Amino acid sequence: NLEGETALMQAARRGDTLALKQLGAAAGIDLGAQSKEGKDALMYATARGCASATALLLDLGAPYDSVDNAGERAIDSAFDKKDRACCRVFWDRNLYLNHVNSCRAAPDSPLSLCLDWGEDTQLMRELVEKGTDVNIRHREGLSAVHAAVQRVAVKTLAALVELKADLDATDAMQRTPLELVVRAKRTEDSLDFVQRLCAGGANPSLPMSDGNYPLVFSARRLQEITSKADRLLGFHGHGFNKPVEARIPSEKENRWRELVQVLISANAELNSQDGEGNTALHYCGKMPFRKVELWKRLRQAGASAKIRNLEGRRPFLHFPRAFKEESLYIGTLLCATIVGLPFGLIVLVESGCAHGLDRAGIGNFWLQRWIERR
Picture (tube, rainbow, N blue to C red):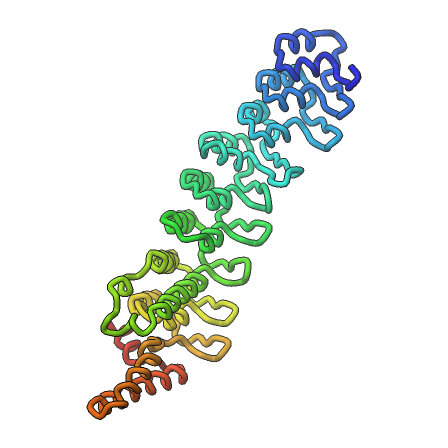
């Protein structure tokens, strides 16, 4: 016709398998004829989403790798529509097992499509057995493991671990799956994913894309969260009128604390340093409260208290802000009265000593010794 379509193409467009059989059996039929748009019968059948017509044309010998004027193949249409039936027609014939529709803004691979189809791990296993690379990349260099982590797909991650996928693979931004979990918003599944990755063989000591390390990054976030909570509590947070909720760690703090402990258990490098030269022990020592057990855990696991940061300071247990700043305020108020003067002087001396010991890089050394000797 005027569009350059043959009867075979029109039958494929309709999904008319009977007409396709009759035309395919005709002598001299050109199964690879293309229209003005460069499309052949197989492309029309796939675009319609007719798996039976697609299978019939392939069995008749139609070329599967023809390219239209836009540079696309029939399989690209199936990938774009996430048409499971049509994709399986090609895969069952061992075609395009490692195809990625890279012409799309958000390309997919066979394994990422399995994830889209309700975490079809059975099909994923079949594809890998047929020859699909378990570490195949799709958009932005992401592997199936990256995709499973991003979509919180526990079932898919477990299958990929069984299939011996590379759990330390990096994407186009040099991010490992573990980094994606560590940087993601803390959820109930985060710890489970970290444990699964580390148990499967992921290296928790590998540097992240910015040169930081998972353990140091997590310890710093924990220190920032506790310090922010300490500032928000203010004077009343540490006085006699301290509210009950102030004594209870937040859910966010608990999850970061648990992440640090999981990374320690996974044998992450304890003495790795960030861009400022700080280790996880540096950040633990800076925490305003609830740091005794974490300090003890790090030290028992092998964290060194002798590593200096870029400022030349070793890790030490800092005195709480309340002890240094708010005690100064309380001591000043007590000194304003004759009765409270002796007590005020004692509080001021304690506050001054705490300031001095922290500035000297010594901190609460007697508490530190007590912890490490327990």
